[in-house]
Length: 514
Image (cartoon, rainbow, N blue to C red; front, side, top):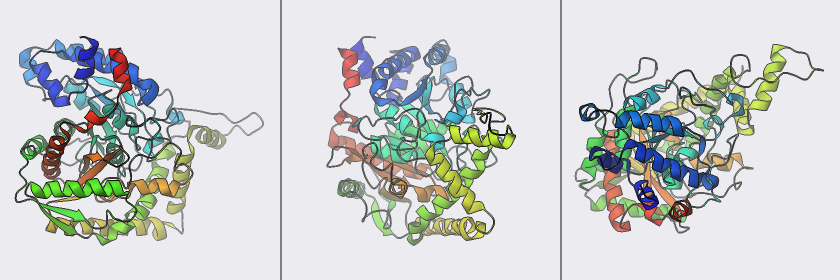
């Protein structure tokens, strides 16, 4: 392929790439080589990847290309299309660190269930993407290794914790990626980078092999540039897994079918609930403006928009920042230097005990944000405070679930802005953890309730940066949010005369053509 062909190829959606594979206009090796070329050009500025697995990806691409037509016909639609993986997901033979020094150099001996499914679908793995350490952050500034830049403005954050996956897809370094979402870590970076980010129903995608942060909140999900791409990817990675005790017995819902129906832009008979508590004060004017315009487009396609109230949502942030650190404190206790990962021995003048070795290892291996959350969680779970803090937070969680149940009696799907602001500059909120935590105010309720939610681009704010709109569906009804999301995407692309990425300046792609 020519360089020009490379830069045009990587701008295609995953579905479009799959169509070229089926027509034999390109090979899977062509796609992987094109993405690797872009990664090589973009990474000095974007830093989305912690580890690029180029040789392995090419081997996987060749394995797909060597299949017979009959064998390819049995595979999912996205077979042969490359994908990037958040470094919170275990990959056999590829270093997996969760962006933490405490796991530096750890090469897993097994694959996560979602990785097994991707390999079975013959989707080459391009590498592992950057994140906030152990997925704890809202900006990808808490990685132990590097800061990932937002492709729309490299002086700004891509959101977090999955900023690496979102930035890689936004920068055309990968057509697809996997992320993990504990309080918005797929959707919030999606909003800030102009990508589509999906948090499936809790238990709808196996968490086996996802490094645990907060087990009752974590969920693996797709990152893409189109709604249909995410639908097809979620169908591949979804389904029951006996190795995950929280896995839902039912198989994936018909999400691709719903997305394709939505592309017809007919929403007659659908009731969409505008969540009163997720907007207004504290939301950037440009964010509100694009959201309100999107709501009008949904109405123009026949949807009935009604305001719904979820009064307990105002307690969601407080409840989340008790439940999540408590589970972090428990889950991260295993990183003690005894079994795997980093081990730091005490100085010679300090007693050479196991307890001291653990203390020195954890001091050296964990970053400030991880330590902050471990301390908060340990306090919340301590004797005398468990009922007052953790127990009370779980009661609030039940009330938030009730709010969702009541809202879904009035509407088929709920909507809100995804993030209260567009991407902020590096360092802008690092000294104010509470201000950083507020970035997840609109995404956290869905995690507490275990309901599916997704963010899609709603346009650009007055500052020229992407804005996201969030769709939330009832539990185990993920397909319900795909139809209006795809309809809005189609309507907006008509207005923009193409996808939002037409407005993205890409000097790294220009350098390939030079």
